[in-house]
Image (cartoon, rainbow, N blue to C red; front, top):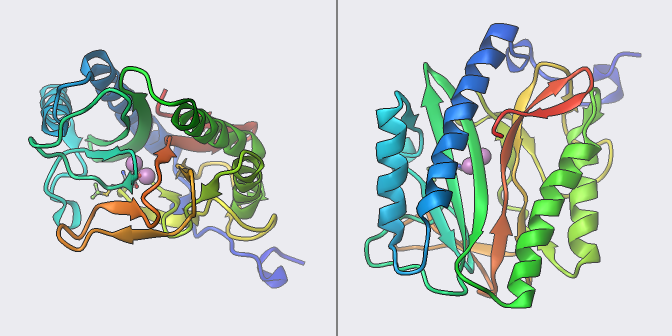
Length: 261
Ligand code: MF3
Ligand code: CO
Ligand code: CO
């Protein structure tokens, strides 16, 4: 019996990239990594999230890229900066100053020659509390565990199952309202990469597919809300801290390869 006859979701042909497309996404990934490295070099207490936006914008443009967030569905800046209880999609602002003990996610997406790569990292400003440091570390482990859980002809749910298991084991929760996604020719493509769920659920993942894994891990409850004033900023409902790491991957015959190192 074919996969489709078993009621499984299989990728359309367009979701399987050609070797040439993968090389293009790889180059976008190299620039995206350089942008995040540039942020890492300069980020410190006392600077504003607008300063981070300036670094990302200038570096990207001067290296021939385009910051994908700018004007994406009306997003006003070139990068997302999400501090403490902000889960994701925080908007850089000159009045928002990084303080000692803050944890911040910087999420960059770069377009180069029409190809997209998407990745984010957490930065700890100065020294934070052991609990917030653990959240940052466990969120990173969740991404690594998700990566290792994936192999050719596995399902999205096999990844999410392992991520949620690790988060819960550490007393944290997994955000459900936002997920990873196919990426490469557009910012957000199919499939949805959910970070929780049942093994064998979701789409079949085959060689040539390019997608992100980007688990958002909450210290408290998984529920979130969107700031009504800006329509973007996603915040944990209990206003406890949240952490996220993201890479863009290509599925190969051997498993996942990171395109945003
Ligand atoms: N980079 C985010 C992601 O990982 C999406 C940001 S959309 C934006 O999918 F408009 F807020 F930039
Ligand atoms: Co993404
Ligand atoms: Co991203």
